[in-house]
Length: 159
Image 1: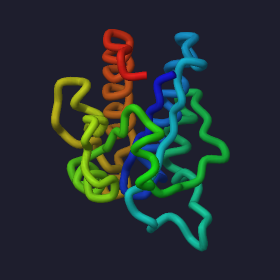
Image 2: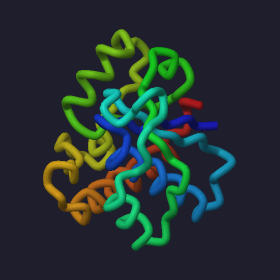
Image 3: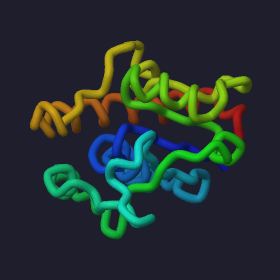
Image 4: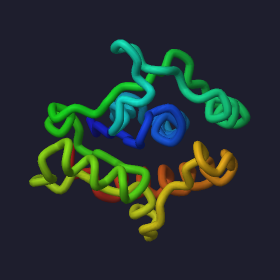
């Protein structure tokens, strides 16, 4: 089983969009049993008294436009123990990557990636919290997740 954790700052927009897009993508290919996919935040800004906020409504609506549901998802924070639990820890932008390295104590096994690197780009996933452009974010998520799955199907070694 391939275990993937998508990570952004608050875990209410980009990383849950990736989590549920990727779950849908692998389900369409009949591969759901081969994957464990989740998402987390580097911050606690969307977590109050131990309870995470749900997916940001415009992000939820954008997924729903494409027939993808994310019901029940609430923000959670990345923990140091996640490094051992997951094969791929995938950040949305350069700040996420820096924070992930700090929070996880580095990356001795080479598990940390920026999502669009699988599509041959080092650009960040567009952050709709600041831009308001959920269409651009969805396009970035789609591009990155499709490239990630293609990479995993070509290179299934880390399982």
